[in-house]
Length: 77
Image (cartoon, rainbow, N blue to C red):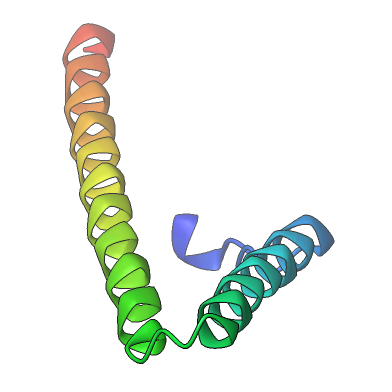
């Protein structure tokens, strides 16, 4: 069952998450070195906009999966 599936906290997920954090911290450090006063806000805006895009993609994939499941259910009858 999907609700029983393991969370995506695999080694690959942890590695990707660490890389993401490292890149964000590196960008923030460079921006701070350049005395960009609103560096943290810019980084937060980038992260939040990406979350919005990602959520949209996930929702669309979920909707497509439901539609596909319903269509397969009709074909199996």
